[in-house]
Length: 273
Figure 1 (cartoon, one colour):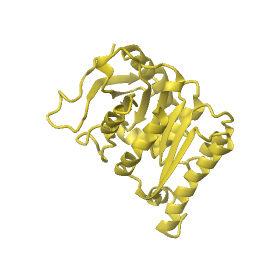
Figure 2 (cartoon, rainbow, N blue to C red):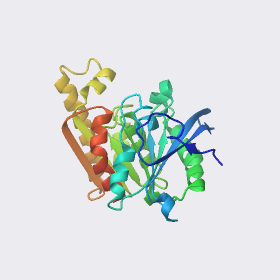
Figure 3 (cartoon, one colour):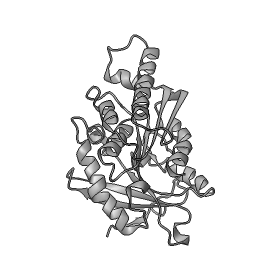
Figure 4 (cartoon, one colour):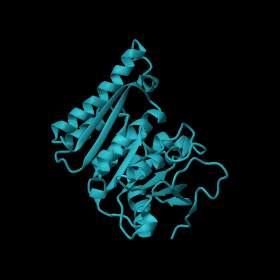
């Protein structure tokens, strides 16, 4: 068993709401590296023997605590504490990224994305299911993240529908290896799960960094990011996703944690409600 300890008791300053546990040095045979794993437990977890859905989220250092975050906090704990008041509860597993390896691990097209997803499926999920009261099935298992984390979430959902049938893709990177992600969406012929997908209207600087000569202006880059995510949306719709797809656009939102935090309540209500 993993050596779980209270995240908050180990820190003099934090912004965590509720019960957050951490275990250190979880070994990934798929990647031959080690990382911490965070688990946030819903408010009623210690008050009953019920089982809960689980969402696996990337960039775990940015989910719960402003003091550990390198780019701002999502407020997952605050959001789910509020949603618990209307009966929406879940366990959230936060997977911190590996710093300079982040892009490589979250890239399924020429990177180590497949190995990273297998780490979640073959190492982390069995540990979580064995040590916490989870609903094990795919209908109650989600994967979520933003930017490159949105890309790897969509990949995991589309590649392993027998494991993940809930997906939250916030401002997903879509342009790696040409149309590879879009083609995966088109190849998904059955509306097997629920997908939350979004984009902001001011995110073009991200795609412009990857394609510095492709755009004449910042507005062109903003439109390219928005239109690429819209294309993913249309691909899901083409394959039968209607009530099982929620797509949101925020025309004033940039590519950052405060923007994703603002849209998180809508995503979780849709995926878990």
